[in-house]
Length: 224
Image (cartoon, rainbow, N blue to C red):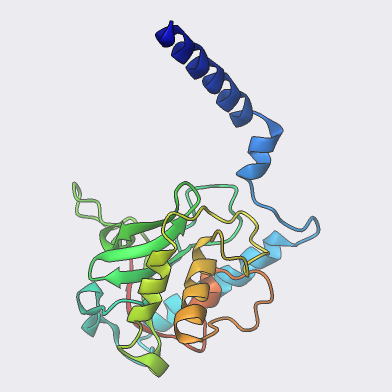
């Protein structure tokens, strides 16, 4: 009798969860919340132009501090990470991805499928272990000259957010119960070091905005 009741409860729970998964409510819960008249084509063009500029700078070797002398092996924690690679989730309209170095070869980031989580820098380097080839086009590591070698509190704060869900409302970056990738990076710097990486971004902040932040300097990059 007890087993029968348990099976019935399990079946009901499965029916409810399945109904939610394919309901309009579920679609809203896992889809971007954006202003109706926002020009995403223009926004994507703006972000592409930022990445184009930085890639050109790298090729011309005009960064303030050159690049191969610094890598994940030298990270102290708290460095910002930015890549141009588009999200694997097509519904996310901005370009690229952002995260934070936790320690050598570990990261903290927020993804659409798993929210704030701990990752690996190997994933950021994007190297296919079978072929030995890189599949990520660009990767940047950025340091804060103002707090050089004192950014560890940034990764500590970010790590404390582990388990929080992904923020699908890209225009509500001030909330602290959920985060999208670049929102997490900006908030970590603000909370840990009182540094606003993107003061001109009123509501929405992109990985490209972090890349061009006047508060950060590119210390390492790889571009295929």
